[in-house]
Image (cartoon, rainbow, N blue to C red; front, side, top):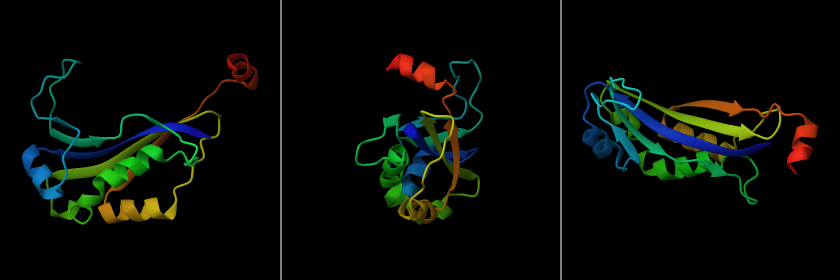
Length: 143
């Protein structure tokens, strides 16, 4: 079952200033990386990056679907619904969602209300599930 996850709404742009992205979407980012920034790796950031990041979130007893981070992100982005198409043509948008499973099966459920929120935002969803490849004996040893 999905145990935790992390979700990001990302806008990348070669020309559009980061402040303009904020203005068009009507929401504040949790992080930005201006084009030309020298990254920790020593690489130079080739485009402007604007994002809202959920940070890692664990499942709760109330939400066993494994989508708590994605839910948080979509709620934070709700004011931007219908505004993504107003971004300049050089802006690329997407949602990245990664989840961690406690088993070798990474199944999860995307409830219809979450799919509706993604559709209302008007962005593609990219997802990765990280599977636990430990044996049952290894899990029992951790308990």
